[in-house]
Image (cartoon, rainbow, N blue to C red):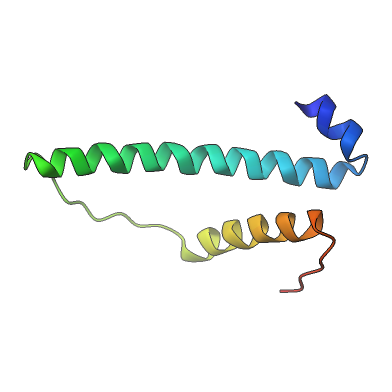
Length: 80
């Protein structure tokens, strides 16, 4: 996959951003599967709620990086 991206996009930064986006997408899909599993547990009333701390700025930056990569691929410039 890396070789294909390098041929399609000779700009190394775009390839790295695309690979990072792919990894982020995979992580998101795993989280979705885990949520579905939790929902199925809730349906049979076998769930436990827990508080989870997270870094809001980090999550926001992840989201903005995803949008930035997509906009660069479309030839748009975002400044934030």
